[in-house]
Image (cartoon, rainbow, N blue to C red; front, top):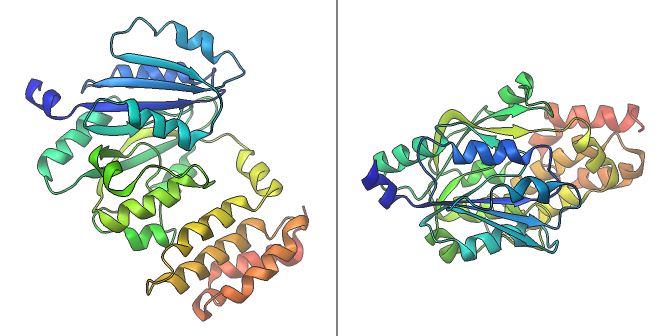
Length: 297
């Protein structure tokens, strides 16, 4: 284990913002890992709740760095954590999520057995505000996933890497950091990552992803920025043979997500022209069409 600890110096970054009720569970799950972290970097991004009070009690732990900063957004916060990190592997954990005790150990074992991989991700468990599993969402989030060359899968929204992939730090030197001007900076980064690297998949559910009921619906009702940001990410691959299909799939997903909202009806109709014949005939589009006609939120 000592040799592996020296070989895999894993820096863990927590970008923290207004999660005072959850962040202690996050921190404890990281500090209690079966494979020890090299350092834990907690970057509070201008929280206005009691997060500071929770974090103060961890100041004296030798491998924990706590930094309070002005609000600059998640991407800038993680990028700063990468910059000041001293490990040779990087991962992050949202301040309302938490990890299985064996998460890092299983990633390390994967890298030991697959020396040609520089990045890996795992299955997850979806939990609610009370840390109780939401089983239907867990099943949905874990199927279907795979490892290897998965650029097409990410591009077509078949699945996402989720939170907390473990990456060699040198990857950021090769492809750059998260883009702060992208609303869905994780999707854009994952496209760049999977375009250049094979990504390993560990099917074990190694982290707990928290979903707050109604939060997604609120975001969708307010703005189409998520769909628009995805499209900006996809447009970077306009020269690829897969581009037209990717744009069609993105449009189809936008139709389903926004069709039920009165303020987004015109936006949804404008997306129909980008659909391929296959997507026009798809079950997903038919669901969106029904929502467009019958649902008026």
